[in-house]
Amino acid sequence: MGLREQLIVMKYSLKNTVINPTIKYRSGLIVLAFTAFSLALFLAILATHASGSTGASVNHDLRVFLATYGLNRFMVTDILGSALTAITLLAFALTPPNVPVREAEYELVLTQPVSIEDFLMGKALAGLAQQFVFPMYVLSMLIIASFLAPSPEKALMGTASLLTALTYLTMLDLTTNVVSLATSKRGFRGWLRAACLTYLIAGLTHSALLKRPSPLLAVPLKPLAASITYSFAVTPGAGEVLAWLALSAVIVAAVFSLIPLLSDVVGVEDLKPLTPPGTVKGGGGASGERVLVSLNLSSPGRAVASVIYFSTFLSTNHLMCLLAALTLSILACLGVKYFLPSWVAGLTGFTINFLVPLFTAIMLTAILNGVLANDLMTYWIYRVYLTRTEPVASALLLKVLTYTMEAVAVMAASITALTLKPLNLLLIPITLPAAVLASFASLALVTYFASKRKVVKQAPSGMYVIESTPVFLIEFFFIAALISASAVTQVLAGIGATSTLLIAAATSAAMGAALTPPLTKALAKLMERYDILT
Image 1 (cartoon, rainbow, N blue to C red):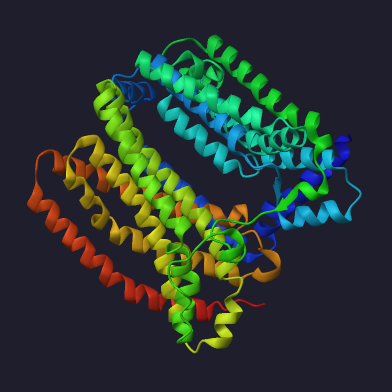
Image 2: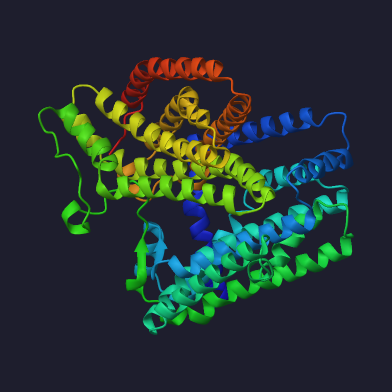
């Protein structure tokens, strides 16, 4: 194992995914400026909201807000620790036995004299360094922490705690792949999976019996949770927070150490080039997936719609996943409503309103990676056989819009089951205009990115980090719209304002339908203007 070789791998990985896309192309600098402007705008809004308030008063408002849900720092710590433990157990249980890599990384291993261990360590170091490449991210965390923490010292510790937790999750991503592969080759994969799932079920069952987070889940990763929570609490003091932060660093180091310990079992054949969500993985027969409609070749436009849209959303796998998501969400919320304490229902409602939109934005960014890596990578085919680009633009817009509205439907169904107020289902049409606008803006950006580099050769795994950031920011603004719409809908549903909600839903649905045709034409013109050089 050589530190020099690992640092070289880290350097080239960062150059490929972050640095070159930023400084090599003018589009990267534009994206960087856009990102800085968006973050500055967000921080200005936050500062305006907190104007006239000290950090202590904002912290007091936060504690009062959490108290309305029956939460204090101990309960928040247990909940956050339990969530991190559950994520860890699921990651070790469900991660496939291979190591996903980008095409450039795969070529590096095949063509350069670098050992697998040095490559994996360099890849891990690159993932760690990505969090600190752009100082604006760390600065924004520090500024946000300064509004929430009771003192400047705790704001610094809060920032360090958040970065430590992000580092843990980053290391966990690669570590679970290596552990899964090592246990699979040594015949223990089934035992590891059974042990993780059994422990998770035991913790959840114990939590249900206690009617609070079980120590089985809350204790293992409590240092990570406590260092974050206590940084924004009035008590305990800075010394105790530093102690929890030191324990968090030990946990991160322990997870990181598993990579070199088990890397000897990883071979070149175990490295799997990335295939983003939404990309073609082979024929339906080969994968066992059935599509409920046949490919329509009656015209080039209908063929495009079949390939891009209908083959995705009318596949048995997609429909089963959507049905499972709706069913499990509804049953889980009904179980919380009827079988758990009221504070759990309040916390669940709070979580649904904030975490579901956030996960939706992350999912949509991944889907747009797939659009770039698959649909736009074969764009030259459409340009050869189509006289107009509207069919491509229409299919892509409907594709992203459908994914968005499916996520909104899961959120609306969950809130309805939790509140037993069917009017909350009207959240689906109410959010349609914002979803249409966000889908168009995201696709316009992705089209622009694709035009600035040879997407067929240079983007087999989707967007670079610098490109995915502004796309996520667009989705972030959609998050704000979705959270606001959800809050207003729940208030109106709570007071029984049926007429108001029906009018709002009908108006929003009409606006969304009216916006779609002109935005489709605008996207088609953008695709023609920013043609992709292949």
